[in-house]
Image (tube, rainbow, N blue to C red; front, side):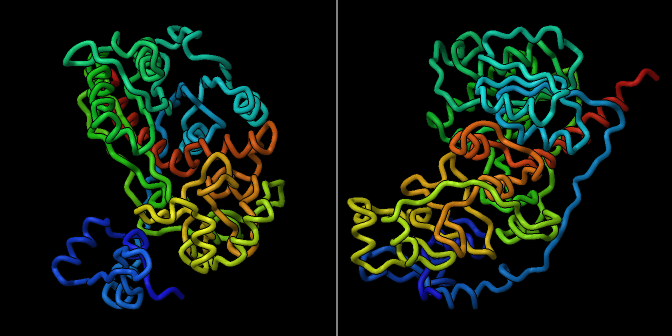
Length: 411
């Protein structure tokens, strides 16, 4: 076991933010020391474990967000990818009426797995969705994060033309659903100093939707064995006077063993499948990294050689040369499992996760098959919304729609 851990690692271990740990440091509850080689602030692991055992070992709470739909609720999904969010919504009882996606391999994946789904392949700009006007209950979509050009103090729909959020808003306006849900990376909060998100909120306001206070959902709190975060933007049509509630987080955290072995999440071990390989030079380095270790666990001369110039730069860089442990959630999966500096190495074998292991970590069912080359499959899985996170968000939509339709029934 390592004697010292970084601020990031201590933060993960006790489930508290880095800011909280820094405050505790100032208050003398937990004292950091300087690592001799790099001068980074690090903590004695034994001290963290002893002082904060109540955070680490607190009783596990499980929360159920399950809600049954009281009517048939229809979803139109934009930027659907390989179907992570769509499968999650389906598991929550929502019916997918159409999905738009530009990537041909992702479209093939959707068609192969759900021949009854209407897959609209191509650029969203080429499609008119007015046939779904007042016939769809929720429009969802993971629009990419793009900067806007500002034509005035308040950004309007016309100013966002040419961006994919403009297309998302255009479709919501054409379809007029009671609720719309956009999802994005956490970085959208700070993109262009928060102006991009404010612009999106003002555009949704302009087309008749009130935006619920934005939240970042941590996938690990929603039965996903992966430290992935998604920012959720929820718009409620202005004629509806109802609160939307985000799904309640679970305290129980699932780990890599839960993902790849038979257990609560899956009823069998992960199926065998193809996967990428590391080059020989990387295998020689990663062979030296223990479970839950990373580049700092390498001998100093190999650290310097492997890290190159970034060895002397600040920051923890905790994802580099990282071997995941069985008893921890996986770090966020990337689109390419063997790329330099975002290693996600198997706990026992010196290799990246296979395609099916990737899919498990994203909570896709084993029978959901991905089209295209191995590289294309990794890309589709890496870009997806974790299925179980989509399911929990789906239940929150069902709960909202049940309330809406029970109130709007003719008396």
